[in-house]
Length: 92
Image (cartoon, rainbow, N blue to C red; front, side, top):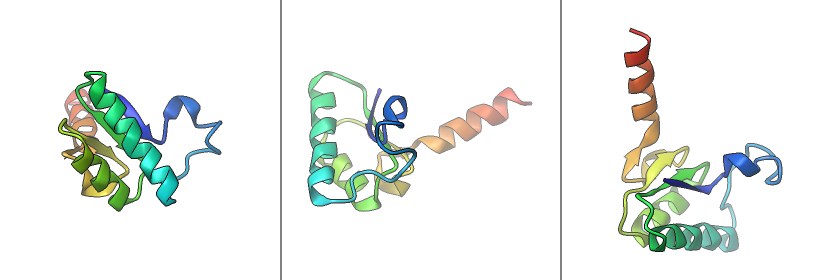
């Protein structure tokens, strides 16, 4: 898995924890990143902190799973459900 949109390891370079892909140019960069991830053979990108429309465009641009984190229901699945479920199981 890899990230598109907000990159946690570069958050300080991106101006903090902010929504990404807000302009058409930045949205296209995110989509191209997702295509490059697919070409590299990754299972699927995590779409982070993206407007719904950009997350949906990423999901439609690739044929692999997309895991939405902060891109609403735009991805193939929403990652927060897995994290919440795992956390619940670990704290039993």
